[in-house]
Image 1 (cartoon, rainbow, N blue to C red):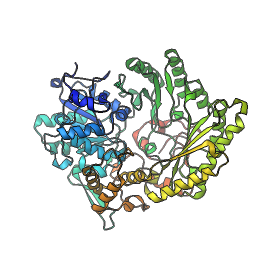
Image 2 (image 1 turned 180 degrees about the horizontal axis):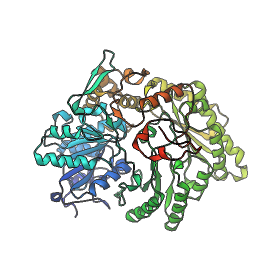
Image 3 (image 1 turned 30 degrees about the vertical axis):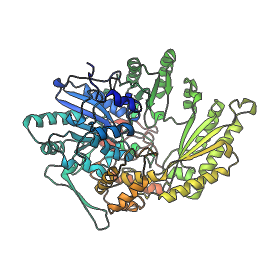
Image 4 (image 1 turned 180 degrees about the vertical axis):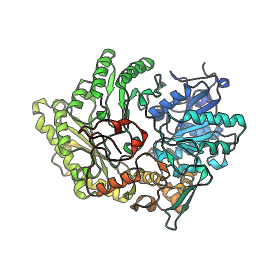
Length: 632
């Protein structure tokens, strides 16, 4: 069945950039008879189509919801600024791509929240959909607005805009939630009663049933449910049987090029490494691997169903997947026959990885990436990176001997305990890698000219549920000073002509830090900047730092309070009512060890007692490499 009428006229489509973003009808898009479903669900990624279409989590949920006969899930993305202006002027309501019908007429609007600087785009979506921005102002005829994704592990800055949040992995509770919705609808229950019952489901948080009070200094005094039966703590949902769970065998194929225009194989969830700055490494514990034979089947099936010409392995650390050699060998054989490229992100640069990459088509057209994160071994120990300078230089030597001539290096500035020596180490390590090229590759073999080292620094942002959640964040001025210092150090290196230095914007990093650890009072700031015209704040050309600063001051709130102070260990955090699996005591231990420069071994070598054995599976119950066993 094909949608007969588009929501946008031909005249509008001819005026805007990339009209294919809005017409639907892509290969594998699901169109159902709306008269035969009980629940209509709009699944939204609050960013431009090309980015949202590349998100695996949306694809998994889209496939899962549409596999149920009584549910029709459609996709929604943030209209780009050109169409946004037209929709506002002509009062065109935001629509689902599949039906081309208004989102406001559907039962649910689900919004995945991946990045703090997308918060104003959430309001853009609600506004264009003609849904009241504040949850308290919505009536029974409005869709239930539910948020999911990593930013929901501190949902408080956007709590006023959502009816519900789903904490954790979406495969486990959506069926129960939608069944509850159908029951309440048949019983004639109002919106509030449905939300009240939903708040009792595992993993579901309904902000309207919780109240927060503050001390005079602005810190949280209490955070409590307002009604009997509403849980005090919300435990995240985890899909432990990832091999038996939903996976999109027929992902939607876009008409235009998107960010991830390829088949994506999620090989595992979680990470064994325990980097102390990394939120994903804590949130997605325990590590759970997908069955290798299943992955082989998925790859072939998805390639057949999409026509894509590339397969990418998705995980936080692909090198740690225990069956990686077998999977890679299979993919190389299968893909060579079909002229399919293989993308191998998140590999640790070692002899095995480089041998694999040398066999992959077109790999020499791209660069190698080292996510060193810190310039000195001392600071790499602080952040528990588990990577030595020897590892990096040996990997570089192997790469250069194998024919690579371009290396990307990623570092962070502003990490806890950072000194000038640590920043100078960024320049010195970059120089050593360049020198390694000249040592390893004879002059007559340098067919591509000199080596290219691209050194990039981002600015450290403390995140909830990491050992650094207590840490202070640098000011904008401090960040810029650190970037200039690093650039000057690079300019003094012997091989500085082979090194290109890039650094991220400081303003947005500070606001990301404010929103990441913010409380419910920040909703008024987000609402204020949106009403002054701010959205697409994740895009540097549209980010308006001055408007954010002015609005923050107008609301009587202080950036320094949220970003630049170190928290005491006993402070109540806005996200403390959420249980992400790892315990606060474990995070405290890691914070203390970080300040002492002590490393913690990875999960396969030694259990660190983080607390996630309660979920009953995954790597916690596998034999350790040194004969130790789980028991967190």
